[in-house]
Length: 594
Image (cartoon, rainbow, N blue to C red):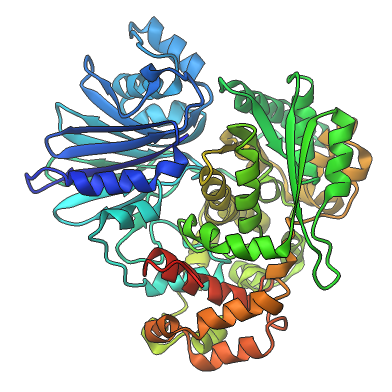
């Protein structure tokens, strides 16, 4: 796990070394163990390493293979690297290191850009061919690892974070009106390739991009998720048996691809508890970690009763952290500075604070993110399924944060885009390869919405502390199996039925049968006291007024009744506005925050 960046020139000049150093420095928190650079002709790479596999200097990056004339920077983990290495050795390749990075280099030489189809893992990488003067970029199937870029006629720059590109300079930081519409309608999700800044894009998941020496670009999609039933019908027991086999295999892959101890982020919910149960017999002393906050408005803000139960049941080395609401506010600016894009989900700051604590104990953790999207665990799925209308109508009235009319009430004329989000969602939902309405919804969620909400926040907030988070529930083999499963089976017994059935006899029944919980940070939902004062200051600041994104009447309406305006999935509309402005002030304007 690392931070990567680079520059490729198309105008026969050399890359800006000082800009590359600024970009690499901005990635230091993602990779505290080593800093490295490589340049030749029009290409320069920067790299910050978090050493997880092959801790020796042989695995440092940028990695140059002088025999193959290839150079690599890589962020992520290839879980099946040992099997691929053995296959490549049989083909005659010789290795100088013992990690997964060199396997990527050899695999690219052996199989070309189709090598990505052989990788099980999370990855964003760049390979430069020193002879052809071409650059190959790739991102994993589910977008677990980020890859941002800025492209103009003279050069390409890319990096693991948006902030690193900003540090390099020369970026168009004007706001993208289409991206803002997505951001405020899809619970902060801006589907690739857009970001809220016009000058920065992101490589879509399951895509690769090739640049020739003269700047020609080829974008290739190498994987699509099939959400149709198998030709031969399976019984419920068949589906459950297949889920058990594939999930166990995924967890084992995620555990074994490490030369350092692996822990678990234990929320006390079904997903993280099941990971603990599947790991407990294979780890001598398993570290587990939980965090909780102060209650607000009578809403419980920790799940320690359940995480304690699981830790005791499996005799883990448990670490429990209780955080005062004053600490949440104090750390918010630092957390926002690590958001590659604005993320108003309440648990972002929780992950940031938890990452700080966990990184003092281990370098790798497993997390339960993705299980709800893959196996239908959220409350809005059955509501959508029970609603009549077109697919877009059924989806939007249970998911969109705001209808288009409210969006126009909120945004100034400068950013008053047409209803681009409805058009985008309608196109996504009607794509072929999905049998039922919920197949369409879950496929869109897993391949797009999940990528730029829970998956991105876990990557950003853990890597801010040099902590690698792995997410077995979105192992692509498990995702492919679940996508073919009938939605009714996933939604049975309140959702995630296959995981509940698998957990019986492993996890305590009290955890399986409890009501679904969420990572609670109620101080950001029930906006009161110092939190409300901070949001008022941000939205009434001179910077916000001069930026002119929001209509002042709408801001005043939210400030007058901050707890009365919630999205359909119970997010604070006031916090959503304040967070975007705060993010811009910290990351684009360069202010330290309020």
